[in-house]
Length: 418
Ligand SMILES: Nc1ncnc2c1ncn2[C@@H]1O[C@H](COP(=O)(O)OP(=O)(O)OP(=O)(O)O)[C@@H](O)[C@H]1O
Ligand SMILES: [Mg+2]
Image (cartoon, rainbow, N blue to C red; front, top):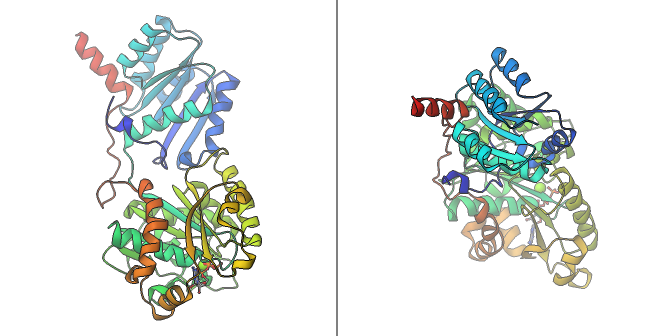
């Protein structure tokens, strides 16, 4: 087993194209369900009703995708011959996954020998398909190493921006990871106050720079907070006008992810469409709530919506952080009851400390420069994010695209046999 195969596939997968050829409605359905899996946000999932013959004729005319999945009812030599013909029509880097009718060790061995990445038996469930495609893509393209962290408030004013700032300073200055912090709230951003910069640009301008694929323009829009932390100095947007769209924001985030190993997006006060697109694809989500009933009620609803848009089921990447504990003890839900009320456990607690937090904010002092704030950030945020941040170097690893396709496997076999 290769080293890459052992890597976690619980990541946002690299940009890629996958195509399935099948006559089986169950396979098609299982495949189409991948579209709601957050890991596949950047994967173009194509589907065709057909078999290996259709795939062959398609790729005599068009470039082949990163991964082809072929479902077959026949697994005798007539199929492997056609698969070899398909390999010859594919680009060298294309990988293949075969879905067949039954378990057959000899067939499995010969397919693997041909360079096929995996052989699955019908019926195929979505999680299995997701895992096999994810492993194939990670093996082929490597992982970008970048982590997208979304911070959102269950309700306005619960401290999401303050904790975004504390998290960003902690990841950059304590974990020593190059980090970019951005605020999706447009003209409603107040990050400049705590981090000591004047909003010199707008989200619209930042999106334009990303869309024109001029990273240098984007670089000029960054405010350097410390050696490892940059914040996108937006906030100059008009408060009462509609800002950028979800697709545009994604282009910007993609460019930031390509440049920085950690990107933190403060979603508090951002338009719903922007919250949704970032929450759907973030590697880690910190949902901030106060321990009060109104906030916890909204937290519970938001958690359920977030789970839905990320494909349903348990989501280890969704964490609840309770802030301002003690602001009004008589009206707060107790620590133990919060988990029952919202349906997930509490991953972090911050006490109400106006002297520390409002003090830092109003004097422009970094939260990590305050002993008390730093200890809280380490215990409640950095511990949480550490497992989600790549332990690799501080530069973004570009995809180490390899010729791991089945065309090269086939060529290897031919040269072995000759
Ligand atoms: N634990 C805390 N103790 C004391 N003050 C806090 C605490 N957390 C946040 N604050 C203060 O509460 C105010 C609101 O915080 P912040 O702006 O981060 O909230 P938000 O959730 O981002 O709000 P919005 O919904 O407007 O974006 C700030 O002045 C901040 O300094
Ligand atoms: Mg905010």
